[in-house]
Every structure is written in structure tokens, then in C-alpha cells.
Image (tube, rainbow, N blue to C red; front, side, top):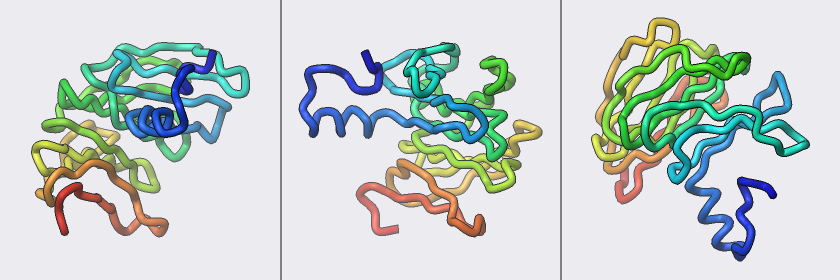
Length: 167
């Protein structure tokens, strides 16, 4: 059974389920790093066999996920506990955790992997973290309910969509 395509759901229900889950495919090895708020810990799943090879303990409500450009680290934001975990993608072990704010729901990394960005839904902020040091570099106030993040293709901007806001 595919754990990311629950049986008995119609197409709309499957799409709603997938919206609640974030998955990032590694460019170095054929694995998927996935989180879902309804699941306590992120899974590492091999492709194409679709077999869970590791489950990694992190904070409460893992939701946001990003993979470093070299695929050596995975960053998981936990919406309930308000922290981000850095995971070594080779050993599947947690190497650091940093409190980032209230309800981190989106994660993105700079093109060089040196800076992480987490959108904090209920705090209406974006936390900027230096990935090497684990230090918070800045906390930026943004519009109402920032849910996700994306880095522009040229790497010069961070885009933060806000639900219920015109900012």
C-alpha cells in the first residue's frame, strides 16, 4: 500500500490529503522525505519500491520541509512545537533543532543552502536562519497568515503567499 495515497479516497479527497503533506525528492539518491501533520514523524521512502526505510523523531506537527541543494540535509518545520529540525539525509539522524516561531508552515532554502526561511502562520512572520550556525538571523513581519515559501529562480527573492491578505 502507498502510504501517501490512502485507499478509499476520491480524487478531491486525495488532493486535499496531499495539500496537507509536503514531500521533497532528493537529487542525490532516489528517496522521498515526507511529512504530514497527522503523522508524528517524517518518513524517508525509497523510490521506486515505495518502502519506508527510516522514521525520524522530530517536534510536534511536522509540516514544512526543505532539502539542501546538495541533498545532504533535510529541514523540517514543526507547526505545533514551533521549531525546525536539521536532519542528516545520509544517516537519517537529527543534527540540530532551533525554535523559530509560532506555527512554521512553509520552508525554503537559499540556492547555496546557507540560509533557511520559515513562514510562521499565526505569528505573521518569516524567520531567517543561518543553516551553518543554527542562529536566527532575522524575523520579518509579513502579511496575514503566511503559509508557504518559495525562492525565486534567480535566488534573489523569497516569495511568501499570504492567505486572506493582499500583501
